[in-house]
Image (cartoon, rainbow, N blue to C red; front, side, top):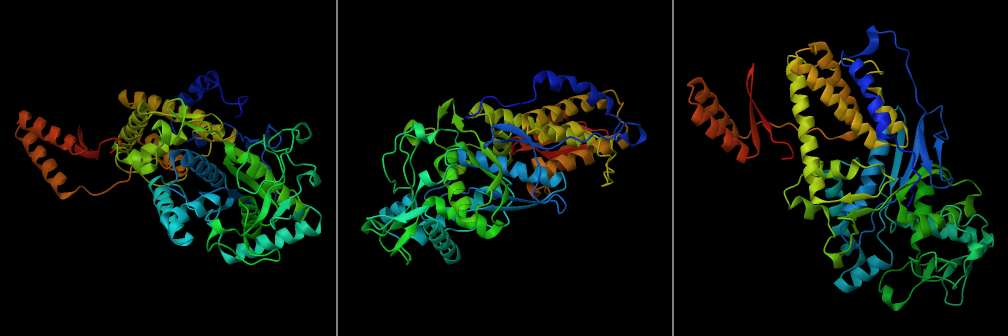
Length: 506
């Protein structure tokens, strides 16, 4: 866990309010402000420093990102999705800044856990994992997470072949060996940089010998398995190799899939802080041991998610999957907001009060957009806006993806523009400009409520209420308003007539 993050302070956010008020008139094209550009900066886990982002190929503007995906032995939980949403925001912001992102997210469908789960369920491995793969894709759609360009599965034969080839290279270079148990292990003492990502000194730690299983912590440092010799517990799971029948270790899977699809060198590699050691440490050793090149330029890691201040666990009864939250009446965009609103390097505490706050915050955005459209006289167009309009939002994200500060600026903008609309001081052109600014930043946030035609029964109620108001039957009008509200819709009376919208969070 990193505590020395360089986040924007509340004082900085407050100081920017003056800039917000100055820009309420809309685009700055009519003003003489010089454009200001801020460099992208990310906190690199490898260096433990904020670094200016420099892509490997700046001329092409292409960025390769590898993100650790789900291990499909069960349904992904909300802690997993906290990391996936952080990675989604990262990709979307890079694209907003004009980069072309090529992102790969792996699917781990063979490891100790998946094999154990399939064995206990009494079904083939592929059938066991298929249900959780399908659930994962359903969940990312619900949370509006952009699909990666590729979702390689570890059991795909082309990646198995790549793993075997990499292991052969490591053996030939003296970095790996086959032991008496027929498994192949990586020699960590032959790779001097092992431990630098996790920032601990291996010479101060006592080795307990080779580690064949996939997971171990820094108290059990030892040579880790690249290829695991088949045993009875594996059942029918196994592939032929020069070292006998067996299966790959978890770590070599990601090295093989990443380099097969993105090449020997990658711009950004992401994951949760729990992946730093041993998984990402092992990835560096394996990949650089094969290629002799720097595997990843920037390592970005997301902090843990807590539930009511405690670590999430089934034994505590605070373990939640996405369906668990949806069953409580929450929506996908509310969950997306709740999981995205805190800086990725700060532990996020999930609470039901937090979900209520997410609904209220989205309601503020929804109401603001309705008012902007009305102020723009329902003549919203897609004209380009001056890039300086509301730039503080993007500058906050430039600063190590500081979503907390970015959202702070958004809601300050909502507050100031609402005040201007209350005083009839926001012109239609300015409202239109802010609408288009919202469309730009929402390409990162993806929080706007989806529009839909009114269901027939809602349209009937709305028409009846409109008729009641024409007849000045205020009691009937209020009764129909309450009925609409109970069904999840809100009736608002404006100078242009009745407006029917989905209630916030519904």
